Length: 198
Image (cartoon, rainbow, N blue to C red; front, top):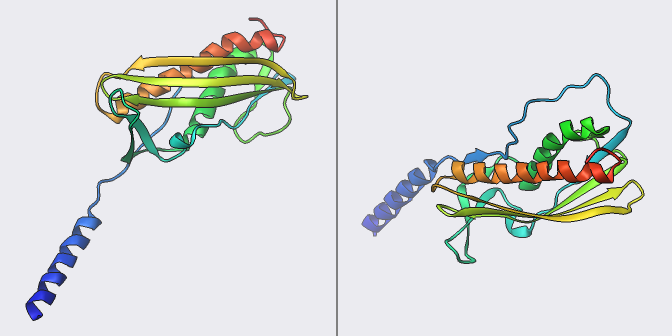
């Protein structure tokens, strides 16, 4: 009986030691890699990027990837987004839109400014994930509304990019580039609906 208690105690100590040395979590951000914009004065008209919606399978800290061509998903345990994915998509979109929209007489409201705007851009992410050594896919529905909530324009943006490797650095970099291209696409589309140049 005493020997059994000793073995149990030793197993408990080994288990506790293993738990105390867990793998550290790596954190990733979507990036736009743009230079900051400065302006002496801002236009009178504003565009606000509304909070972005993402599907439930992406609404988590762990980075989601797919297994081959199947519908099986893997949620990384030690590779997480440093901010909610919806916040990252919103932030990158604002960063990319700022300079082109300023050139078209529209100020993109910064983070934290939820005041009434002349135009509101809604983004509904349908898919943003990828397969290692295959491809990453982005599928977004977008809507531009006036301050009176009238729909001015709607569109669908779908993109994919090769993922040449098995690291989360490579996967998240591919996802960043797709989100940036989506926002760049909007810089070409939105001015035509806000009275600016197209």
